[in-house]
Length: 502
Image (cartoon, rainbow, N blue to C red; front, side, top):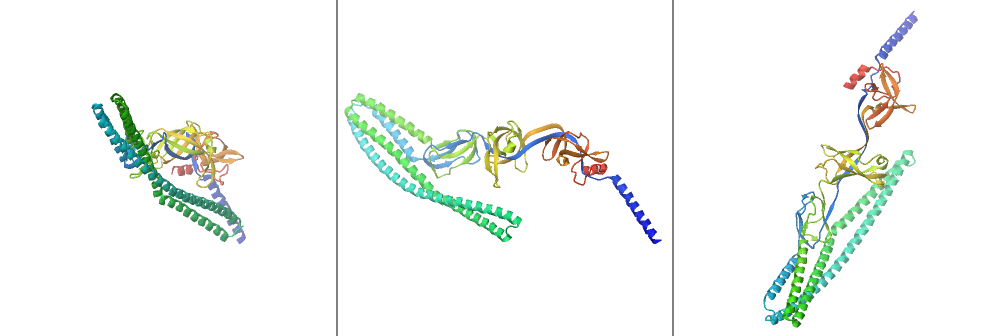
């Protein structure tokens, strides 16, 4: 009797479980769903761009002298003709005054009677010739002394260059040791994962990398220290070269004046008053040409902005020597910003001239502007990434549609090159796509059941994919089906939609 009761109880429990299961199956599963909508989708290539300026201008020093004042600093906007710096050279100013005095003397002598003043002029010419000769030999001695000093300083500079070369070799050797140790560590990590070497051996390789890195850092520090410590030696070279150039210029001027004075004396001894007037004209013309040349040299002591723009680089300081040919400033027009980027070759093959670009600055505001691709390099170049990976990249140039003040030379921006887009496209989440029998599929909720349907994809990005055929706007699809979803599974659509709205 007890056995029968137990059997009845078991049958009752089975029937109750079946009833509960029936109710549960009728309720269906609650899953993530989304309604198919239409919209615009873009396919783009993301990378990092660097802000640069077009038409960069190097502003070089033309004269010789000590930099006395600097009027333009890094990042400062300047107008064409603005004064950038001024150098001091008292020797040129003294020489200009001497030439002015010479011109005055020539004019004063011409105004008097050439016959009456002939003897006096002859005596003056003899004195002037002797003085010019003394000045020349003094300038020659100073020039020879300056050349000797220049040679001594150059010898000292060669020693500095030798030290730099040795330190550079040490840095390169340390780099090779560090790279070798890093490669051995990578191999050891692989062997450790396979159990081929012990943890202790792996730690030894790690320590070897640290040691090599320490040696490399020390070598770099030594090289930088040599360059810093010997900066005064470099300045001494510049000063010695400048001194030699100035003495050479003074020697040439003294030689020219001596020859002119000797010629004046010679001609005055043999020429008549009439011919003396012709000599005067020649002397005056030569003096005026010398004055013009000297004035031009003095004008070169002022450096002015050749264009209206912004200072990108400043390479000069007050109380340092200005050397002809030295690039003092690098300038560019402020409205000539462009963006350069190096795109992976596999991606760059899809980029065309004129493609639209979305540019985002890296400030807190994350301001966005548009631009377009205006130049694509004809070939790819090998580039080593920060992780040491060799990549083929293609350089492109982007022209912004507007100028942002926060986009400065050398700044990095995030770019999206839009290579394809579609408007009024049928869109579903990328996560809703699954593959079944080598075909793309989605689960569509049809009559509250999950139905697997083949689709044809179009453009896709990181979030959405365009469906060219297979589903229509307004249909409900599973947004992220997992392996537990089976075709024909009942879906509790109401709860699923409620969860989506929440």
